[in-house]
Length: 211
Image 1 (cartoon, rainbow, N blue to C red):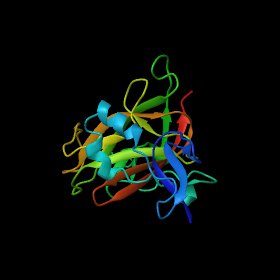
Image 2: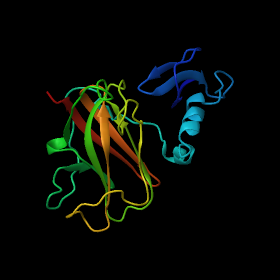
Image 3: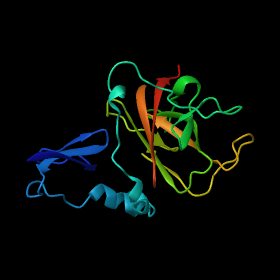
Image 4: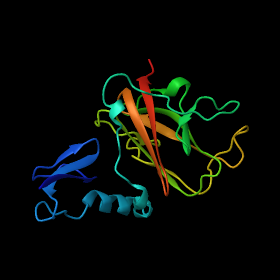
């Protein structure tokens, strides 16, 4: 029986194709057809970033909800109540400062940001949420990964460690704040997925290019 096997990877032969940063390949459920070769991209990533392998336990498959794949973008689900925090969008555990109704914009400029634009982004881990979390994202079409950080080749994930990296007045006691650049290749509807040890939050945002 043929099944779809989804792993991180690059374009290969044998009926495999790359879609939104994920390798989709047909193979038999019993493993007799299309056996997996060592993941060269993961090996290279580990060589460049020694911490890469340690976060593997949080790299769950990216999920695009059905209501995101067609029609209007259902951005802005969820908010964190509190003075000055009404524009934080998220689930129960992690929130992103996304402006009104889950809408964000990005800018491009000469140099490293000419192709992949971006803006500053803040992530807030709610009080009482313990442990590390991994932030990744993808466009609703599956064609554009969300990237994080500065430079010409920003990472496709942002790691929320055990300790906050930033502090701001007025945040809920016990919350953790992290700030980075969030980068986009094109405008559209995007899914931000946050994976923790015991939770998964899916945040939908609508992104436009600032003129």
